[in-house]
Length: 182
Ligand code: GDP
Ligand code: MG
Image (cartoon, rainbow, N blue to C red; front, side):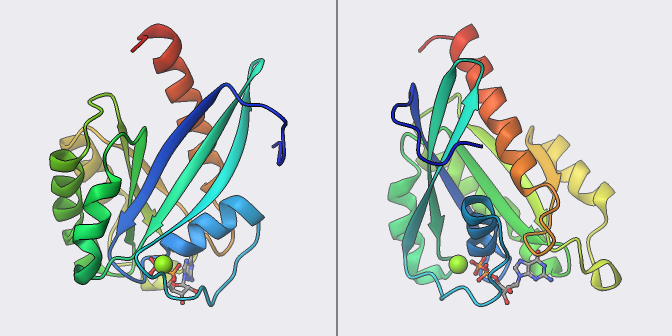
């Protein structure tokens, strides 16, 4: 990983949505800083982080927008869907309501983003809490399959899959760019 490269080839906007307390801010913190910060300040509206990922001879700069899940911020969030390269929809594998609400987040992304090539990634977070799990891996996979989404289970606490899902995203988008020019 490169932290402060002088130049980049692509600047891509990514958004992280999902119900409150699913761990969105912790995922962003883990991605950017490599650590678990258990008491993230409550996100007000929208916050963002930056990540540079080198691919082949090029560097992709991700601008990652972290949103608040509260209903009162939904109208603000909607304006951030425009021109996104990708959207992560996060649920908590220990919270069934957050899983059921994925379809609502999906509808928001679908109706508000203009880029038809955007990728949507379904993420089940908190897999470190195996004994409290309410959503099986198979259920997550099924929902992703039914809606044509990429799918990961991760833990921002122990780090499982957090870097990996962004690396895969960078690779997939890079592949899209070089094979399907805008
Ligand atoms: P957000 O509202 O979606 O941004 O959620 P936060 O990132 O603020 O996290 C909500 C709560 O879940 C906090 O108490 C975190 O410490 C906790 N949390 C976040 N990710 C994980 C995880 O992967 N495992 C566990 N056990 N707790 C997590
Ligand atoms: Mg937050």
